[in-house]
Image (tube, rainbow, N blue to C red; front, side, top):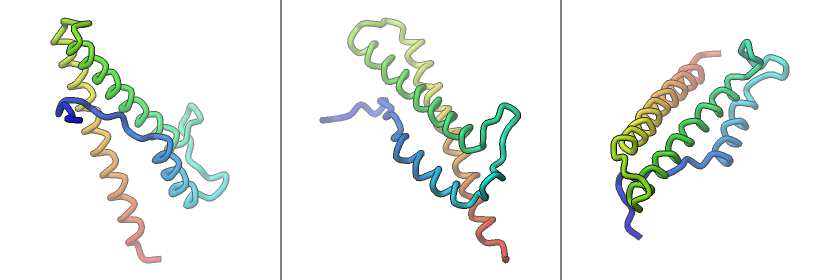
Amino acid sequence: MPTNPTTLRPMPLPEESGRLREALGSRIPSGQEGRTADGKSFLDTLEESIQQVNNLQEQANQAIDDLATGESKDVAQTMLAVQKASLSFQMMTQVRNKIVQAYEDVMRMPM
């Protein structure tokens, strides 16, 4: 089945999230996990951000489908939804790159 190049695919969250939690959780001593003022850990905040990006991608897909089927005639709103999803995904990718870079820097530190 040919795919539309503008169609955004939702991210696989449950499996990836579990692996992320496993990888980071094994390195954090019990009781020393950093928390924000609202009681969330860094990992919780990261998972929430990934979910928000995923939601934007799903909204963009729905807007594209609605435009293609004629349910919506608002091209501007569709393009806005696609751009929001694209920009948020690009930003999340850069944050991921920084996290990986920081992890690699820590792993290279002599002990």
